Length: 337
Image (cartoon, rainbow, N blue to C red):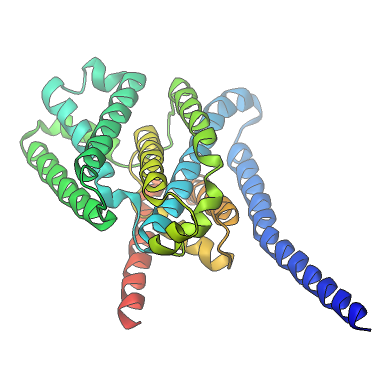
């Protein structure tokens, strides 16, 4: 009798685990279907019968750019929030977006909008990625010189650097030629129009090269979410993994920002929606849902603004407005706890 009761209890536990796993997979399946449906509408809506090939040649690269951007933002934000143990922070707090604005402003201010550094999209992309990575790695090397450096100190230094880059950019934008400023403005808002295929290939190669370096570490983020002391006690090399993760985050943010421009509040929006949709500590699920939510938000937002509402406003403006309001809500919610 005792053996039978034990078997029944084990059977019940296994059933509960199976149901829980099915519940975790449900949002992934639903989001995948929604992304496929939105993508089909984005590619097909408004195409005339005589211009199908031309329209698809323009829309497919844009859809790929959206997928790459959503992947970079969704992954980097979820990992960044785990490392910092804070749900209202995003990688942009390290000043990478501000550095991008400063780079574009300096290029146009010194060389002009007609120079090869600005007009050649491939070269401009490489310059932005390289300098953003140099800035991020330089910041990490400077901050992590000392042992047991707190990550909050890194964020503080990043915020100061971001403020400096914003001030520098604002000063140059005030004295720049008005015609040059109009061209600069077009680069400072995230845009998925006229995406260069060569830049897409470069971005895809960079992202694919990163995957093997971080894939095996995803399971360790489940332990890192418990806190630094608990993670170290459970055998995780916390400092090494944190530094490695920050470098990966910097590369992903640099690639997504250089590809389409800064989308400041998308990360905080999708990461928190993902945590509400799927109640689990497993980052394999959290990261997947975060990426899917990010891609769906961009595809559906671009579809609604461009094809349904016929607006010329970049989708990033709408996302940043909604994300900003949600950020204020999170601040208000945290202050009441």
